[in-house]
Amino acid sequence: MEQCSGINNRGCRCLKKTRQSYSCYGIEIPLCSHHKTYNPILAWSYSADYTAASEVIVKWLNFYSDIVGKSVIPSWLAVYITSRLYEQIPSDLPSYDLMRIFFNSVLLPCDAVECPICLTVDDECVTTPCGHSYCRKCIVRWMHKKVQCPLCRKIIC
Ligand SMILES: [Zn+2]
Ligand SMILES: [Zn+2]
Ligand SMILES: [Zn+2]
Image 1 (cartoon, rainbow, N blue to C red):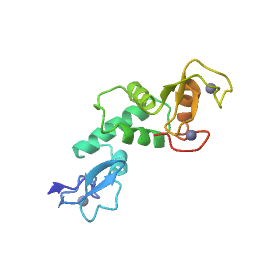
Image 2: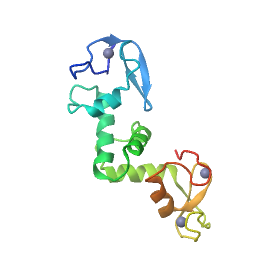
Image 3: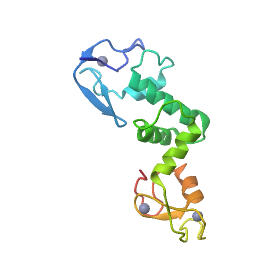
Image 4: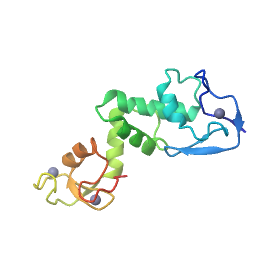
């Protein structure tokens, strides 16, 4: 039995024990039957006090605030990057490195091609997982706004 990761209406962690865990942004979080329909990470992100949150949620929130706090990227993208990187990476890396690791993990170097965004041939070309190629600086700039391939609209992950 594990302690539920939900927050009660006094802003404290729920004291109930549970055998059930639920998937939330790619991680499994224990939740009691009352809290199973809550999104615990979203709830804790509104709470000023993370100290009562479970270890997994604190690690997730540290990632999230690192990315949101030190860059101009929108919060939905920070959620996306956080959920991608959560399992693999120690939580004390600077946000710059988190972004770099994220881009390096999804954009692989390829032969020089004409970039469909700027229509030039750049030295540093990369391919997305859906198989479309761009110059690195164009697609990185694009991905700060949308994590979708500009050509086929697939999520880049
Ligand atoms: Zn609960
Ligand atoms: Zn380009
Ligand atoms: Zn594509």
